[in-house]
Image (cartoon, rainbow, N blue to C red; front, side):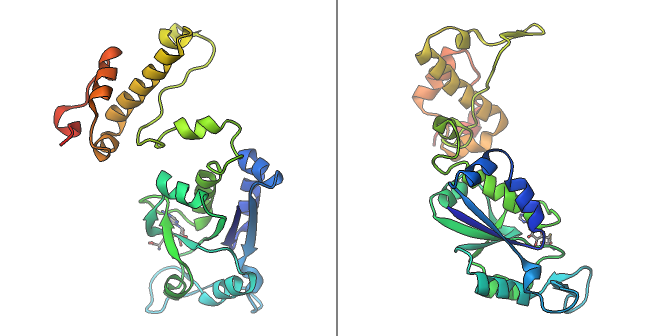
Length: 250
Ligand code: SAH
């Protein structure tokens, strides 16, 4: 998989991408990450990538020329995705879609954003990391890269962790514990300490359901409530059923 990032701060991306799982995936050649400095394409003495907005108003806008020139000369992989708060919101489904491709490119905005002609005539679509505004697309690009790359086969040490974790089946992950079995008098649930693997699996599924019911009832509603087996499973471990009208299957 090849991911290209177009930015005026390539150092931010390179530094972030050199560490941890992502750094290892890159050094092992599972993922190739290329950065393109948008200032490299600027011909004027100040290498300016921004200019004042037509019509007036606060802030500056990213000029079209350096961005079009970078894309046309470097030919980064498509889709070319613009990070922006108005785009399609990133979720696990979109991360999975991107993880199934051979690559894509991320264009990071700065200032008040980019000239609209970049949106209309250059990028394939816009992607948001959530309903809030950050100062630039670099952090957003790193969120996308992290969410996608960990789904690429061979990147995570333990392939199962990608299958079982939050959102993979519309539920949040079950709670996890490690040693010590007793910490300050708070002990690890008994079921996890016995060797009954089938019971552990049922408990985890039940806890996953309960955690989602409590913390993200919208996810339960989105999957159409609970089925009979799940209701029974919650009962087996004495866990709460969801508040009546929120989760009943209609
Ligand atoms: N004036 C713009 C915000 C510009 S923030 C507006 O009101 O919509 C500067 C840059 O940060 C954007 O061009 C975009 O690349 C990035 N950015 C800010 N918030 C983002 C978000 N929620 N998701 C993705 N990118 C974001």
